[in-house]
Length: 77
Image (tube, rainbow, N blue to C red; front, side, top):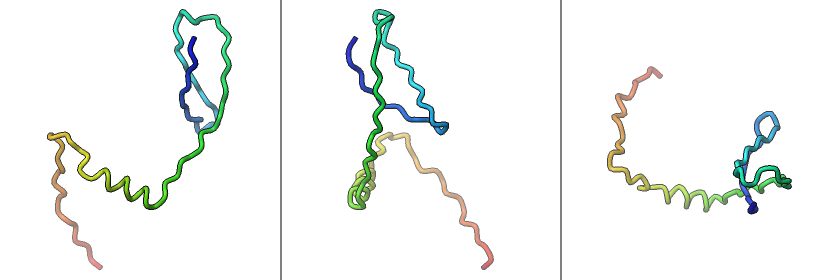
């Protein structure tokens, strides 16, 4: 059996549910599971702005189109 690293998220109920199919050839073997929280990576304002800018024009699907936006509703002030 080879070492595996994977990510999972703890549910809203505080329970981590993990299913790992390792294969029948590895049945009846003892394994060790380590639970280690993943540090959240936060973006700086500049990094976020660069990410947003990098998304511009990223849809390459030629069938993608912007649908009609309809009429603007005039409301009384």
